[in-house]
Every structure is written in structure tokens, then in C-alpha cells.
Length: 124
Image (cartoon, rainbow, N blue to C red; front, side, top):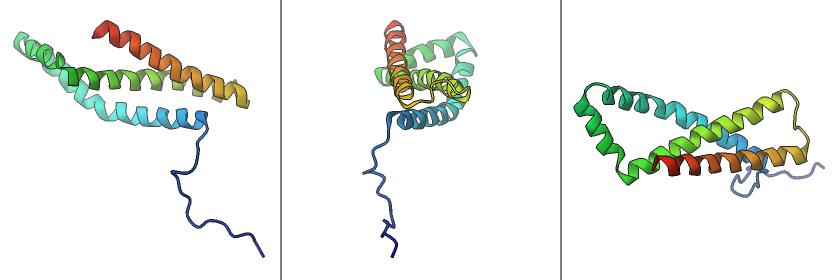
């Protein structure tokens, strides 16, 4: 008699390895950037229409909530970029072993957060 298998997997109990977590964040950040891109282009277009619209844009950007959202967009971009480089290396069969894969995953998270902090600090 075959061993009984679970009919439903509880996804909240499954512990993902770090490379899988970084890969999922890569996809989520790409989707978020795709969805926010029309809004950013609309803001850019409206800020370039006239000097008055640029002043309104500068006032809108000065709000702390707006800065936090833009900081999130900056992190999504930087994480997607760093993880994309990691995925390109994996496509070239570089870093496929477990230890290197974990190390590059930590590097992607660390570099993206560090760059976000540095650039965000400069822009704040």
C-alpha cells in the first residue's frame, strides 16, 4: 500500500531556501516596476509641462509618504537589477552549487539594501 500523501500543501509551513526567496522577490519587484512605470511616466510628463506644474511636482515629492513610496520603488529597481545579474550568471552556469548560490543570494539582498540606503540618504 502506498504511503499516504498530503492532499493539500500548507504554503505557510514550507520554509523556502534563500535563493528561492530572492528569486520570488526578483519576480515581485519586476511586476511592481511594470505596474508603477505608467504612473512614473505620467508624473515625469506632468512635471515637464510648465514651470508651475514642476513646482507642484516638487511640493508633492516633499511629502514623507511620497518619499517612502519612491524609496520602495528605488529598492525594487535595485533589487531587480542585482538579482537580474545573478540570474544571468546562473544562466551561464556560474554559481550553481549550493554554497555559492546562498552567498550570491545574500549578496543580492545586501547590495540592494545598501545601495537603496545610500541613494535614498543622498536623495532625501
